[in-house]
Image 1 (cartoon, rainbow, N blue to C red):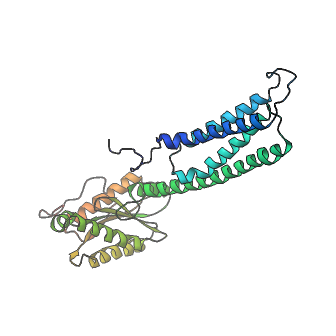
Image 2 (image 1 turned 180 degrees about the vertical axis):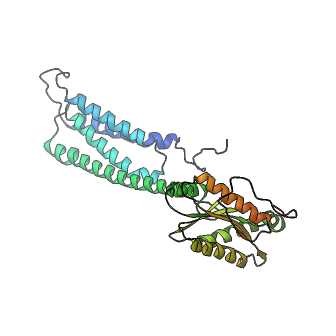
Image 3 (image 1 turned 120 degrees about the horizontal axis):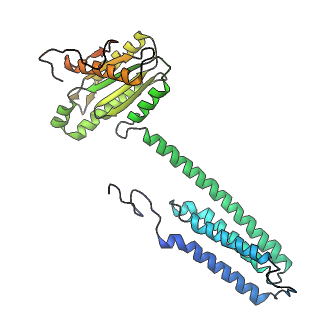
Length: 319
């Protein structure tokens, strides 16, 4: 298995008997304590008819069972104990009130007990549960937001990933834009010569440089390995060309670990009217192939006549 779920591992799987059953044990102890105190200190009610006809105790018992079921179910939630505290305390106090309510059908309670113990503990329990629910919802929302962001972010460079790149393209179907595919030249040789840790530093440095270029109309992403993509939301060729040249120039100026320099090859193209996303990406990919084949460290612009077959390249070119 790629991942092992355990209590202290990558995932939290709440299977601890202590965590799951301790609140129920406390609930049971509270209920027994309430019964003992009522039976020991207060007189029993004189019921002139059968307990079946006096059905109030059935509803109170049902309420008590439901609260205990909620307590048990809630503690199966896979969050830290500190995040369960408010709801656990609230439910236990609420159960205390429900136990008093149940005994009220059997024992003649004094008025002060009904007002100051039964009603007050119910109110305090509800308030604690409300605070706990608010905190849990806030926690879950934060975790969901973090998970959503992480699913669209490349961990190494902190740039958006391929999934986000594809999603943006889908949102831009009716908008004019340019797409650049960028490949770090001879990246395998950098890894072989300096090691993968330096290779990672090269990717981080290049990703940071692309991130600094990102503006409202420019989105950079890492789409795999040493491959990056940029979306420029403009229909003006000069603006797209200026952005591409800036990327090429800044790449040549990058120095990693005081000795590693790099260059990049770029394929670029704009979306034609009524052109599919796949057709555009194929044209840009062919342009990138030409840039790598015809000497690297350059930009090649996609032609509208390309339909999936790379143009011929010099015989001595290296892909």
